[in-house]
Length: 79
Image (cartoon, rainbow, N blue to C red; front, side):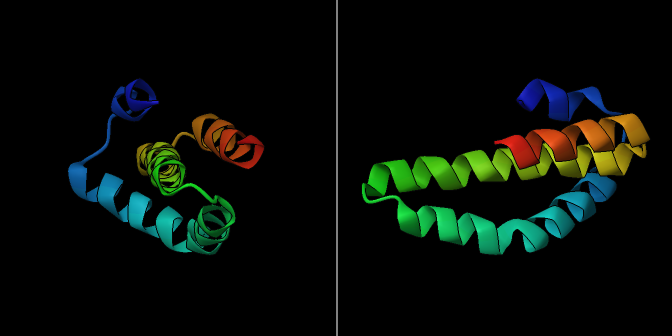
């Protein structure tokens, strides 16, 4: 996942903006999933994974590649 984030050419500010936008939109789902996990260590892992996926989608958006954006959104939806 981190390789996917790094693969796109985009400015750090564009990546950050994309990440923040995706994070804001996915926060309700992330919180719902985290609350459903009983074990605290697994809860941290779920939130960390959602942050990485938000980074993937944000990087694809920052790069402006429609196919990459679609793929990242499909990946986020499937996970």
